[in-house]
Image (cartoon, rainbow over all chains, first blue to last red; front, side, top):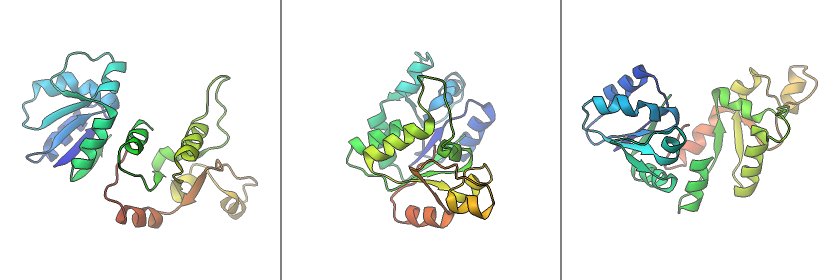
Length: 88
Length: 108
């Protein structure tokens, strides 16, 4: 399982992430990547979607289909993954 | 910094913190933030001291952005070093070696 951590709020970067996804991969929205929340919801993808709870909170994002995770859970997700790819 | 703290509070460890690209600007010791604010270099320096993990800045990325230690300052006749003492200039070889010895590399 690869964790694709998306730090960018640009639509093109989300497109690159979706193109690179393999079955079983997950997307983690972090930083300004949390603003992809609305966009991701409209795109059908089998990938599990996570979002850093603290980053979502400071950006006023309350409604999401993503699973909100704490920083310790972020570490666990990273540790359980085969690889982490960061997208900026 | 949040990820680093959360990692160290778990049963995992961190070998190195490597600054690359524009992130090397964090190592500039001449940062002078407004009164009441702490410089990014100082924040990293305090964290590094607290957790005893070396802060390394890519030498090629640093020199081109004016971040030099005494050796590079002398080499390029710059007169004075600009790197915060908590940071060390290293090459990609060092980073490759650490990545090789680590379970994972996480980029921010």
